[in-house]
Image 1 (cartoon, rainbow, N blue to C red):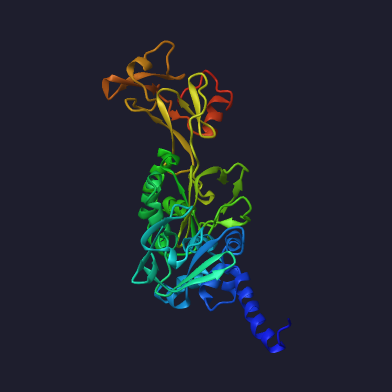
Image 2 (cartoon, helix red, strand yellow):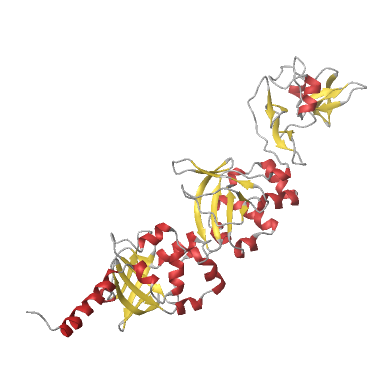
Length: 416
């Protein structure tokens, strides 16, 4: 039996409308809704997160803030958040409003804690038929979508730490970078890390600081400021195997190069990133295992090299005596020098037993002399000869004629 034409329209059209609504994914629904701020956030998210709201392979629950909900937040920050420069923060924000399963308002009785796959807790409740999440009331519940369900909230958005905690606050939770945080504070950059955006902080671990470098930074304000700012990038740098990280520069205007080794290890310049992608409201934090010394400052890293014939090279070309000296950086920050170990004193860092040994430790035209007390000796120079501590390449070449291999006759003190 055929229905009259007018009946056919009345009965079939509602079914068509319903089928269209149900065919919409959450992403499609948001694109056509009046949730304009949330929709802008979804469009500013990474392709991977956007696809989550469009896939039909899983069902989601989305707590969707309407435009009035965002009125309770910093409007300038929200505008920045959806500008396209803050993908990691937007991703985190959206996922915090989502559950990886479908839950209707009728499924909640009393109060329950829900833990999602990221370990984040949502507090769901229903009191006097008012459904809520984390203390925020749901104003429009149970909007069906092809891949889940949407609950609209109006009082306020849900705010995870990634959009409320600053880079500096995030950094204070990491014990292994306390030295760098002290240097940041001493240089006066705490406020910047609490307010400026976008920023990326590359924070060296405590173990990354050689004592000689640290001494320079503590007592040389220029070195301190230039080194600290060389660890700040005025971009929101999220590390992933596919990200394009060409032409990145620090606030100090020096280039930084990130690389991925294909085995979940990231490097920056000559250092390894030991903790990556800590998301903060105003940028990103990465922990690194080296200090990025700015080339403009001329600081160099000094290190103990292999001992040869009782001597070792300190830094590129400086010769130090093994067992009596340590390798350190000069106060000027541009050279490596030898310093006496504790208990060793004088120009050659000797005690009496070492000074009086046979063959003599003192160089040609030198001899053992008292140093302050009868128990301490040093190598002195005969009349008309001047003591010189060989601590740079030109002196070593002039006094000893070659750099490598280290001759057995090398002495830290020459009489010239």
